[in-house]
Picture (cartoon, rainbow, N blue to C red):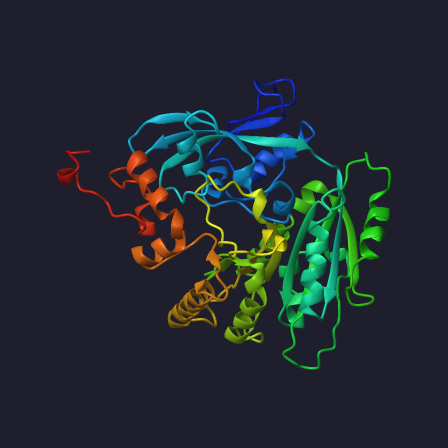
Length: 422
């Protein structure tokens, strides 16, 4: 074991207390710090978020998703052990078999049951390089069909995401975060029409162990896709640069003072059966000419999520076909420039998000918010649905006074005067 900064300890398979590679890391450490230190041992976590300057404890409290989620599950599915301070002030070490109720409650629990002070994160061998590929579409059905084809090939594909191209200006902005030296300038010649295009982004790791080269693998995959002719772009980058790709956008926006601006975001888990209706709702609700930021849209697999955690996914429709194991995450990641969007404008955007979320949560689409925000306890009850009773029981057990994360408005605080019977 190496002595490392940031309270991170890395164990290769055979060195630690379990027979896998893992990292013991403080809850306040950033994922970028864990990446730096694990790469020194040729290792890395399996599951990521797109932006790495987030705390380990923070993302484990919501879920933690990115393009690897279809293959390895979210970050909450890649944790071996947690140290947690409960609302009763107790420090508890928990695992799936030791204090499992607390372990699963905290994962995706929005900070309601305990504060993660330390986490044991599963690691794997890290590749040195990545083939990073983008393919463009003008047909939504072909776009989603190919995304689902890609996630059906986990032996070849290591990452799958996608985004909606609302306007060509977006393609030439820093938000695309594709290496600038590649002259990534796709042109669609839409002649001012409001037609949306779509982009699939996938990656193949070069781990030096495959029988075929990564380029041959990409060619094999590309032959099976139905993208627009001459609209497939590829790059080879280091694994570190690929994972840290959003940092390019951040530095660019910081340079022009547009990083630390309001971000009225909306993230939704959408069942496959409701995806086209959600796409239509979204495109009817936003103005492509005025929208600034990416709209992410890519598939996940329901069976990669442990239903014991507190994270909430949309319910599969009763009697749904096998392909309903697929659901999508849609991220409407808008930026609001204060120079053009006043406080009232920002309130309007938040009201718009609320309207979209409410409409999408209704029967017919059946979506659920990811990183949820709701205006009332009744909305929270609806959000958790049939899991509400389990959530309330966990709250009563681990934080009976409602001390933790009261700002969400899920549970009321209980005064000390009424707590004597607890």
